[in-house]
Amino acid sequence: MSRATSTPGGKPPLYKIVMLGDSGVGKTSLVARLTNPDRPLNHDISATMGIEFDTQMLDTPQGKVKAQIWDTAGQERFARVLLPTYFRKAKGVILVYDITNAKSFESLSERWMAQLNDHSNADDLAKLLVGNKSDLESSREVSAEKASAFCQEYGMEFLETSAKSGDNVLAAFEKLIGIVHDRALNATKSKGGAKASLANNNKSEPEEDVVKLEEDGAAGSGDANACGC
Ligand code: G3D
Ligand code: MG
Image (cartoon, rainbow, N blue to C red; front, side, top):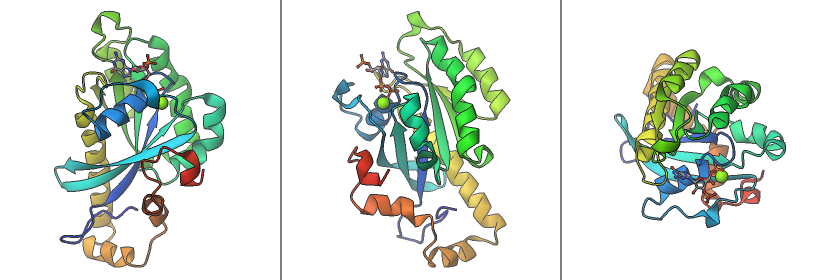
């Protein structure tokens, strides 16, 4: 379990979340919009190879937390090799499709949910469905009703976003990280309270490898090699 609580004045808890979805749906653009909202949508950064991650401080109703957001190419052959590393210790997942591309929505049930189940304990992961490119309403192929029905089936929340306009981007990441943080706090309580958790955390828990990646200076470097993948 990640550090679910922080000491007064201490570091906020850090949670790993992963982006999933077909190539081209806008995963990299969403992360870029979150971490650098003033940068126009520009695709020098779109040729995502392997794995990269970035960190971002986010607000939740229970205080500030740090999200370590992993992004992948979404290219099947490459992703298969990297998936175990990708999912390791993840606490949340954002499943992204493109509202103008019905196939990208079908891929969620045909491919991405199966990979989630194969490589993680899907029940332990907080999940958020994101329909991106909401600015392209006239080209819409996936209705919000259809997406909501999918969410009910898999027990997840849903938002439509536009990485291009910035609409709902922060809200999406905050929603997911809020769920992750709530779950961690509840788990801490049910394990005997925050005090016990803090005591355990001082015994250098194995989750620290996620933190270590960041401390190594790899965070945001955009370099798959930098995270030892
Ligand atoms: P990916 O990381 O999921 O593969 P990218 O997707 O972030 O690389 O985005 C793929 C393409 O979709 C990019 O276009 C990008 O500009 C565009 N895109 C991403 N999000 C949005 C959005 O919300 N609205 C619109 N209109 N376009 C978006 P290019 O042409 O650079 O390939
Ligand atoms: Mg990408």
